[in-house]
Length: 596
Figure 1: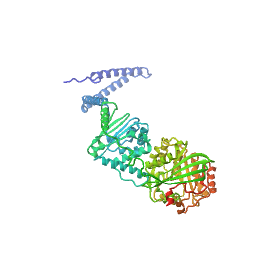
Figure 2: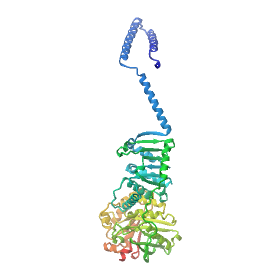
Figure 3: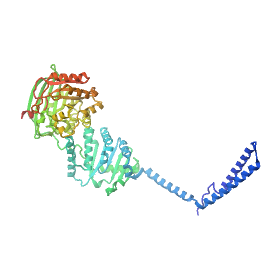
């Protein structure tokens, strides 16, 4: 039988201490009493004896009660401490092997901070394995997740993503990728979206991220692998400083209660998982996130007609324009490309290529020639590149020091942004090229995506086409507002007010008896005053076309345009009048609708 450890404070020892302390206290009492003027030793002894007797009796009663109602729990306490010590030793062994924590996954799902810190902690490495990873694109995480991945890819870091789908085949993969690409195109045209699975939604979000946030030369830094569902047996997250895994269960209802294990990177268990991940993706090829369904040169694009004229203009820094319009045709439609040479008192100033982005346009603006075209076909990337290359090479523009690419007149950027943005990124090696974009429907998202292109081709202007702040008149002149909720001038100016850029322009289309009153200009002036240092206004004469005649739109004389411009200038807003001496049907629009 094991001998119990002797505990000091029990038995004779405690009574000895008690006796010594008591005697010392009695001596102190008599010393104090002897120093008083009214010492009574007999009474004092009586009080001391009475106090001692009462204390002894109380102590005895307390000891009897303690023995009667309490047990000696020393053995139980000692055993408990030993169990804790053993548990700590086991935990220390796991920790030394690299296990930081093991908890139910649901414990972390209730705290956004945990998952957000995972994203923030990634800087040089990010590997994700899961069934769909749709959680990362939910509102509470999407902004920081997209920003982090875009930053890493643009910094030439690699991001590995492994996703899974049921019944994976080459055909099912192709159908899914085509659906994602088509979904993106529909969104650019503001058409109704299709129902998508979690995996398709994740691929769509990555597709948007690449096309709108990442330089296309770094797209290959995002490696997305699609594997069969049964191949993915665990969730895996690997960053610079964290390694997290969670085994998947066959029962989907038990996913939230599965264990989440956090490992210390570089340790034994973490290395096992890292090696497994490396072996897993070594045998697979990442999917092509460009998802191009059309490739190569346009074999059926042909030049149909060429028009040329010369005209005098009131412009910003030039007064004469030589215009050549090239009309091309293929099996999808007819496209007009304008080439302009600008002169100031016979001194050559610049060359301008005006590119179409579509055949027809869904906005049907009453003042635009393309409103007469009933169909709408957005140009593909290689169609635009073919048209651009023809003009650039034919006019030997590589010899010019300054060439302006204008995407302002034929089709609205908003309805074909995907192809336009990809096309512009292809022009990054044209060192003499600058670009102007225009839209009637700018919002923050479209503006941010467009400004991103400044790193490829320097932006001369981002232009908002303006007709009025009167909702009724806007719907009359731009019929698409009757069917869709699209952004207007206020949203454009709100962005301008917070931007550091100064290349914004308002193209004020002046229409007689519609928006050419002093009151119209005063309201516009009031809206522009807060951003007057960042914006320029072009007061534009209406271009007469068969469409403007059909819609009973009248022109305004130059004196009126000058008067409107002066109101802006008087309020400190940069402005100039833009109009031609004669109507030549060469300013904008698509000549196809003029000649049929």
